[in-house]
Image (cartoon, rainbow, N blue to C red):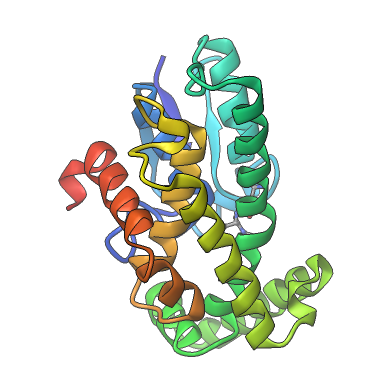
Length: 241
Ligand SMILES: N[C@@H](CCC(=O)N[C@@H](CS)C(=O)NCC(=O)O)C(=O)O
């Protein structure tokens, strides 16, 4: 029962440059679900994905499932896994609200600082587009950037001034730190909960890549959050260190 995981692949010292791919892989590792990674193929991976995005998985029976959250929900249900089993209904509700904040709000502020601010864009460009041969490279860059700008604008973040985007994202990061407090894992749990996996994915994607931003400055100033990120990285990705 080995799952095939379609993701982008290692970048910037992390298992993946996408927080969605990273949190799904963390879930598979934490829940000890066997998986193999299917190498990213620029021409095939998105076409094969049911939602046109990464990550997605293929199961033994041929099912192809997209969306990190829906995949985690499905695997948890089918395999009777509950990483939040120690949490009260109130803690589960808070966890859900925070996870949605990360997926639907913090993510977009981070997208801005990777794609539309410096030094993010220059670094992202070098990391992800340099292998595309000339003259396809500038076309691919322009096309993808246009697509990201449209998505960011439709979501709303793309309509804000950069200072506001930085402040809004930094507020989310501070809220994570405040909620974590002095606990090892959120809510004083004995082991990582879903919110721990989400938080690691987003904080690592902000702190580890060599991209400076107000989000990174905020995260680096919060010792409990950076320690939490390193703790989860050491637990689930020991050989990547
Ligand atoms: N809700 C999805 C979001 C996945 C997502 O947005 N993935 C991005 C990479 S971070 C992607 O594949 N983008 C390609 C595109 O939009 O064409 C999930 O949780 O898996």
